[in-house]
Length: 159
Picture 1 (cartoon, rainbow, N blue to C red):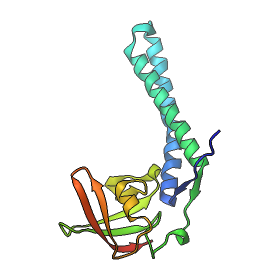
Picture 2: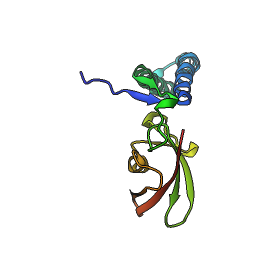
Picture 3: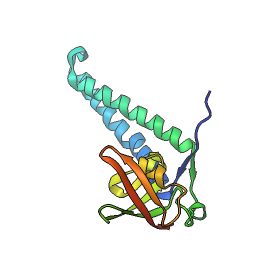
Picture 4: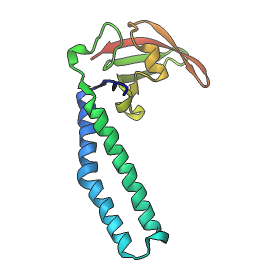
């Protein structure tokens, strides 16, 4: 069996995953079980779309629970002192300046399981994440985007 890959998480990321797991196990599981019971009470389940929907949702929830448990089993909390400020590393808060427009963007590099673009958390495995990892302030990186290459200058790296 392949060895499981360690997942580095921030405290916030770990808390969110644990809260989601707890919610799915304690609330969503019960809600779906109740929906299944009600659908069965309607009689013939062979043509009961409510029953089918509930069973599909149950399968999705159980799959997500397994995924979360596996992630948390392999999770290691990233300590603040591990986050470097001399170069971009996992956990770094990075200010980037897009060279063409001059627009600044602020991102935090996190593992793929806790990335959420709308919150400014990008994966170290994303094109921008890969381009800036290990680079220093004032470095210029090029990211291959569908619309063509984009150049960024690293303005600031902090914890």
